[in-house]
Image 1 (cartoon, rainbow, N blue to C red):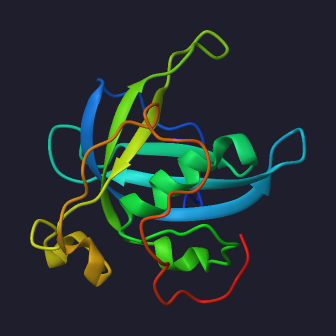
Image 2: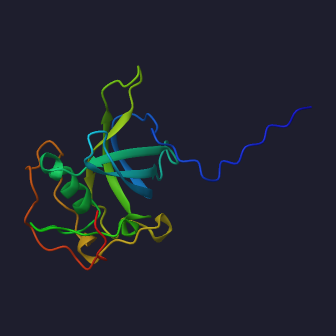
Length: 172
């Protein structure tokens, strides 16, 4: 009898799962800084759904960091509970790990014949809603839920509703 053996210790689902459209609670499992094919900086966020029928399903978001996509950067940061202001930010991406946040998921455009789930927005989870076993480590300002806004409604540019809290100075 042949034995199949594979070490999947470092496997990372880079495309994500297909789940029905809706809102899901997720935990950020990893992040990577990289570049788009055009050379723009890009943050790739790896996450898994926690709770519900699709618990454990992987989702991936790629947030391009350029002037016309800053609304997505702001939505991501505010969803994690960080206030933002109009200034240059330097963030330690390890601060994102194990954060629990709700995401709005919709079907994306077909790519190579497959429709994948895409993250359309991030919504803060009140500290009281995130149980300690979810791995949540939300900043104090995340205690009050944020008003719900879709990514399409967000203004271009950086929102001016406060200051970034104490975050290590590592550039994105």
